[in-house]
Length: 225
Image (cartoon, rainbow, N blue to C red; front, side):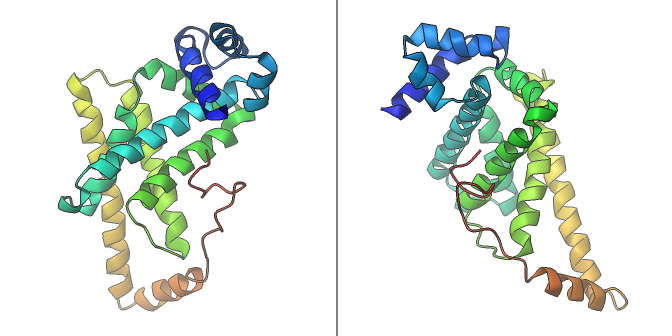
């Protein structure tokens, strides 16, 4: 029942966000539109529209995962699988203004951490869906790098008016290529006579780092922000 109420409130809110943003005005309007008991609504979204915005972000992540599950990823190069996931995440958005309003909200210092967790959660869900099994420092670096690529791509996409967002997809490909170049340079450094031992030593030290246990209070959980 709570899921059904959540979806109803979120759907109602989306018609108001382009005009009023993710705000208390939007939250109140969604409650009125749905006729849901305000006490119930506030229990589900204690911080009001901020929690609604995070629920909207998680909905987009879920739609992306569905698209990935239905695609034949095995026929793609690995870097193309990552690009496919980011593209499907953006294509899950029906109204860019809703995302633009969310970007404004999470740029506020009070909610910046929530926004960072939301983006980290998207990156984590992509890597998890792609079957990532890393259990060392790479678990963090993969997600941090992808979070950066995703964030930059979203900002570009918000201002892209090219047909079918072709400029955005080209931008995304360039960002992923940049990341692949970094991995190539790291490989070359490992083989370098002077730097190799140092690089391998640092990697061995960092190799002792382990990913967090998937709990509700950590950013790596699948069901989180």
